[in-house]
Image (cartoon, rainbow, N blue to C red; front, top):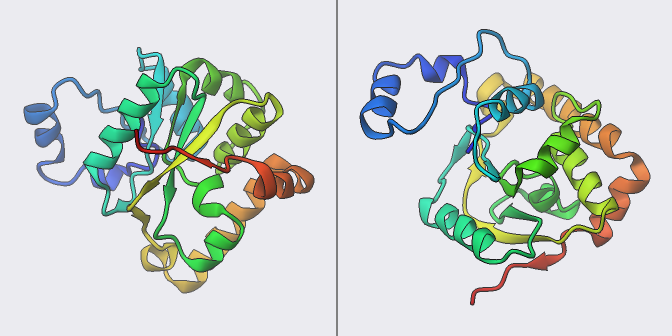
Length: 200
């Protein structure tokens, strides 16, 4: 499991490392000295993973539900025909849902490590990861499903202020479109990851 946006400030809070060591000794905490961006943080995290599957989770989420995560992991492991399972943010803002950003660009997803490594062989950087993964899966006709999750991301304006948050959001969207290309961006909105994982 990789939390690419776990900040140095968060890791240095009193008790954070103690909680990790005392309750989750099997978890390896990798702390980077400088902010290298989401994609490069994941590249670094992958160097320390041993499993066949990878679950990516943005670290700035609110209302993350462990039962939903458990269900997603179990479903992905039990169905060998799923290449990627996206955890759709059903509580996302309306504007995000209009261009299917609640599915296409959510940071919470489970996929095979070998596929993620293939994606990262390309010139992927900053916030291009989800777009690059989507494009790679779409072009290869991989089976990508989504399931509901109740977590929401922390508004950038609340973290950095209105203007800086808006600028960050615009840069992120530009990164996503640049990584995908405008035509692929539209194709994904219309056709990609349309199937919901149904309860058995």
